[in-house]
Image: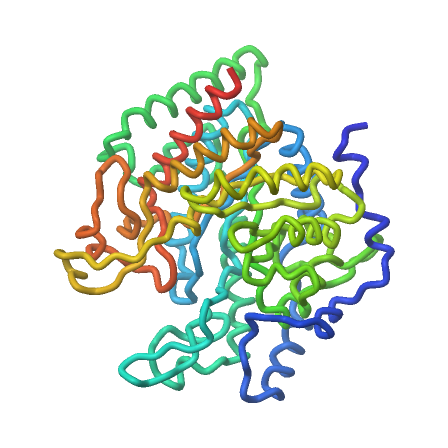
Length: 468
């Protein structure tokens, strides 16, 4: 029996826990609603709506995460910093799916491991913020917390927390998942036709030729396997795809936490893979209390400001039975801080007996603020990230894990399948002055599709070198 087969969470499912237990704990990053009755009505509506995912899908993801811990898979998690309601359309959704499929193809080819594809969408409509209010020209209004809460326009009506947005967020998530499932079921993810995934990358990118050669190599290998077998390799025609979002708005998460027939425990059926952010990772807080009781695999962001003692407490709360596949730790230190911060965390977790999947988020720790001297945004303060800083943190992560007797089992990116210019660097050598051309994010800067695919190629080379 494999390790993953031994880890069905029956013992945790039998514990006395309720989805509402978080209400008795200190809980941060929750919006303030002016009309409690309207909130109660929205939550009641959510409770009556169908779930977005199934317990069987969640269980399949948990088994795959366990295989990644054992070195047989690699997790790729990516998508928007914060989704927008007005971008819930066929083209943006297809573009995000395409770039994740392309990246997973590159990683599987280079790393010789199956890839777990987790989209950071179909529910990523809320964001934690460092301040609860924003001041412009002497006017103070609530901070924009994502479309599940309020709107980005700087006026009192748009910035007020609106509980009806929770219901709309569920609807938009359902539409996104439905379209993704239809695309995959219809052959969009068929490895026999990777040309369906092209985002014009191969036609104009400095690394386009390298990608095209890799696609042709995979096609030849697949045809060779099928000629030997005498039939099409059916398992290669479709891929698994999972959704994820930060479990931030606990009113929403609780309303979509359900029990299912013939299976023990409670399941968050709003997403396959909820995670806890660094700002809400209090071992005694509401977010950890909520996530401690659900059957989903759980991700936790770890990084600067989190002590080793806090991390150990989180492991004990979220993975008390030491189930392989239950816990994923997503570290986000930044290129300048990872060498000082990560080794002690790896050692401390190893001593607990827990075997989490370690994933690197090289985006959040490398955000910087610039004021371009030229270009459309000249003189304005803009957030950006450097491709080289992101890559450097990833390179260090591989080395640190190897030195500590651990292994990096995945990556977590904020990215888009569109031709934005929000991060600098990469094969095109984008600089600060280029940021104004296509800067669309309302919150954090994302890798564009070309930078994302180039990043996957660089990671794949590293994975190949490590395995040889």
